[in-house]
Length: 244
Ligand SMILES: Nc1ncnc2c1ncn2[C@@H]1O[C@H](COP(=O)(O)OP(=O)(O)O)[C@@H](O)[C@H]1O
Ligand SMILES: [Mg+2]
Image (cartoon, rainbow, N blue to C red; front, side):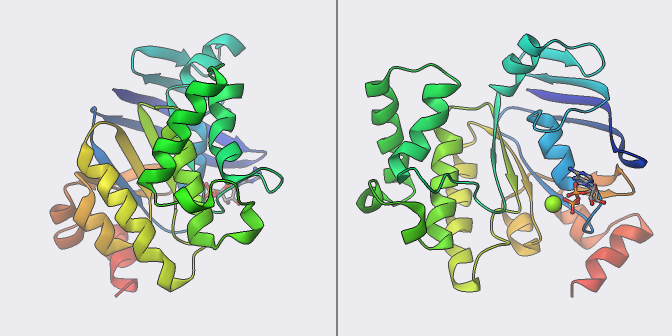
């Protein structure tokens, strides 16, 4: 379903991703953990081409691009295959909840307005926001804004959904509700999910596989059982110990 080969990304002199190799099957739920500043967000952003990697190959659902040589048209095609849920929700403040969820369907997918609205309402119902569809984000809690972010990401019907620390901007009492929504989506096993998170218990619960990122590479990966109970690398151990 998704394959990443030898992905590199730098910001000026800072070489953040130093050759990421990764693959996941349809429906697989992959948790990504690791210290701050090690490129977890950059990795997700490169998959969605919010950042352009300077080297490497990416393939999602049969659409393949080479970062060094790809054209705008190919980038657009591969971008349509994934969507992202951001740490800070990234909702448009001047648009209503319903308009926020409809926007990518209209602007990226050129969907018919009626169809987009129906689909948006379906996902807003799934995330429990039917009573807020005409509200503006400033009148919503962080948890509700993140529900909008999740509905918006789902509505484009992506093959791969990328969650970048979806609960780390939330007040503690709002975290559980968002984790529950993600847990439900994960159980459907229809979409491949990549979830960067610091919620270790959650990662252990829902992930089929856990990746530990450090030093610009995937240092170690395995089942939650292996990573959390018997990590091989000293750095993985140290990272997990320090969270205890
Ligand atoms: N747009 C950017 N411009 C310059 N440096 C960036 C940019 N985005 C991220 N970085 C740097 O890249 C490194 C990795 O960042 P990030 O991917 O956000 O890490 P993580 O998500 O693991 O905390 C950090 O040193 C960060 O400061
Ligand atoms: Mg990050």
